[in-house]
Image (cartoon, rainbow, N blue to C red; front, side):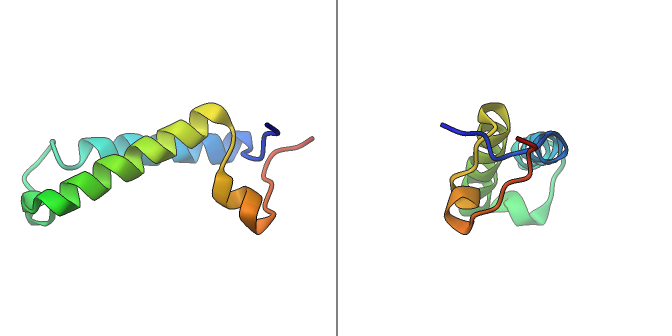
Length: 70
């Protein structure tokens, strides 16, 4: 597997993933009173953290985007 996610992109994905994972459980936002919104937020957070850790984004591969230097 070739890497296609650069360092700045990885940091952004990691931070966004942490925020998406924590948002439903920290604070009392009306948006997360629904179970669906909580599930979507957690799944997206896990995907962001996973793509950051693997340095690979399948959507970037499909679209031909590469943010890392070769």
